Length: 177
Image (cartoon, rainbow, N blue to C red; front, top):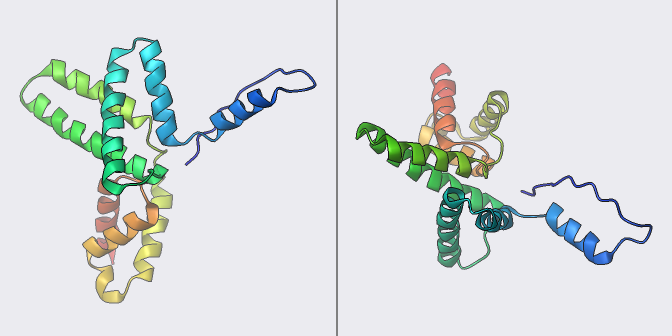
C-alpha cells in the first residue's frame, strides 16, 4: 500500500534532481516508513503521547521483523497495527470495568492515533460480494463451516477488513442459506 502526498512545488525551468528524488521518495513512502517519519515529527513537535504510541508500534514491528527475518510488507504492518489496536481495546474494556477513566482516556487517544495507519475499511456491499465469491468457490461441505470460510475470506482480503466484521457477515450470509 502506497500513500500519496500531494505537493505543490514551484521550481525553475531546470529542476534540481535531488529535489525530484526527494519528491518521488515521499510519494512512494511505505507504511513502515510513514510511521517512522511520523515518529520523528512527533519528536520534533514534542508530542509525548504520539511519540509514546509510535515507539510502541515500532517496537512491535521490529519484533515482527526479527521473528520473520525479513522486511515487512504493508499487509504485515497493517496486521501488526490491528494486533496492537486489539490489545489496547482489550485494555480499554478493563479500564472501563475498573472505573479508571484516566487510563481509559489515554487508551482511547492511543486508538485514534493507531487507527490512522489502517487502510480505509471496505464497504458493506464490497465485503458481502467478496464473501459470497469465496463461499461460491468453496466445496459444498466446507461452505457451511464458518471457520474454513473465515480463513479463506481473511486470506483473500489480506488486512483490508476487521475479522469481527467478516465473522458477523459470514454468520448472516450462511444463516440465510
